[in-house]
Length: 429
Image 1: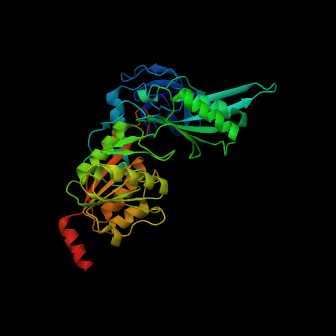
Image 2: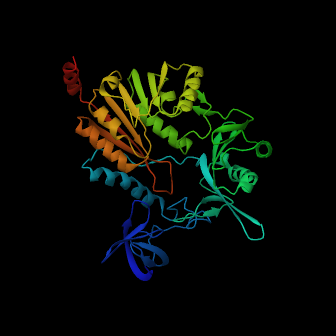
Image 3: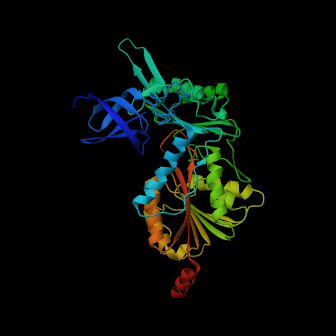
């Protein structure tokens, strides 16, 4: 289908941050256009490419990154903060409205902090007919599969200042393999922690060159597919009173401010609980903080993540008892009989949500459930399950640690009414 040039008026922002215009054939989605703007776009089906802004929104501002509009990392930089914040909070409001839920929803929490402390850079290589090598290292191009070669990224935290240079140096060593690479860089208390994916097993010579890169770039640790090539210093992270050495490539919240905001909301909601289950616990974002005042049972499918959590909990001053269980909660969720031993449950699943675990919680007598999610749609689905199971949806808090993107974290607090709890316990004998 050929694209046609059309004049459009943008009605609102969509879930991915694109402007939405109404046309006779249905909605048209135009990235980088804002509500109230009259624009010219090249339209192909329901997608539009912004060509010109004829009447500009008063909320349009100058973007701060020279790569904005080309790099796919940020969906919105040119929208003033109040309008941006309203749109981000409305993502949660709309998702809950679709499942007929209307709990109290807090104001948007800005958790960008100092910026992103971890990023996955992509490296792609191309050799021409005469043997010259082209190497691009950066993020995916907006709505495309090729790479925008970057020299900077202003949404990264200061501790990530050397991340792009380190990723480029690692990619250069691996370039003869001509394989697409993902290079995960995490800022830790002791320097950058780098894990590469895509190269496959490495021979001695390449590993030797990578060790030299780690020395020159002063990396704390360098790994390939999770296997450590060199660890010059333990890459430690602070989680409450604990100091954690995560396994290579372990999942972490994108910003330190985001991690602290999410954990703080979980701590507040579970105040007074003596025994807490942390489901999809990862390396202990919640468990290591909750353990300061309660016994915690952490459940996670990744064994290495739990080993790191155990070590951190064992060495944390003042930590209560922490037990762990390797278990795939997607396939085998904790059932009501297991859940009823806890005063509170915190669960933070992947983007797909935790439907089976939510159904088990809905059948339990756990007094307090804290649901954490990075996907408003699956959060709403799981929240509906809990409410249908008798929980009161006390509040929801949107947390924005992915500033300038359509991604949003949510913390929901659910309480089992006390009379209902007594009734269920009597039924259980």
